[in-house]
Length: 205
Image (cartoon, rainbow, N blue to C red; front, side, top):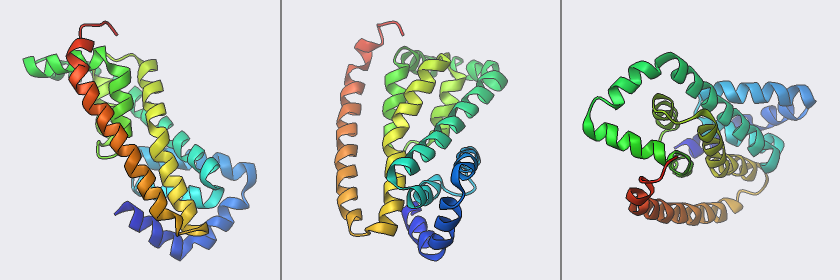
């Protein structure tokens, strides 16, 4: 549904958005980075729409970079806000019940890979990963690195779809097939990781 919204917005307002963004120069880049972070932190507009617009305006590489920067910074800000504002309360819930505590301990021992793979699966809400990581005992830097790295493929997809809608709509079918193949690989890796998780759980973080 988000990609349909991207297509409609770009078809209606694509020229105006392109003109405003492309003529803003360095100042526009800075403002766009700030705006992308705010839109990711407060998603009044679906973030794939933002990524598509940035891809159409700046091209797939710079557009995906700005989209990734905004999304990564927003996740880090949310993690910090929850970690320093609600961790004591949240941890009491996570460790109150036996099964939840066991799952959380396993998550903490394999935090980097779990967060990284979770970011690669688009159906897992980003806010769930942010809050659960912040309420657990996962250190900041492993979270920030795994989260930011895991966001790269989807942010690039949003930007390249937006760019293709403006420059070469015929490439969208090819892009969908490539990303579907990528998701299949991620799914197989995720299944493998789940099977190996008990043995990984005996290792320290």
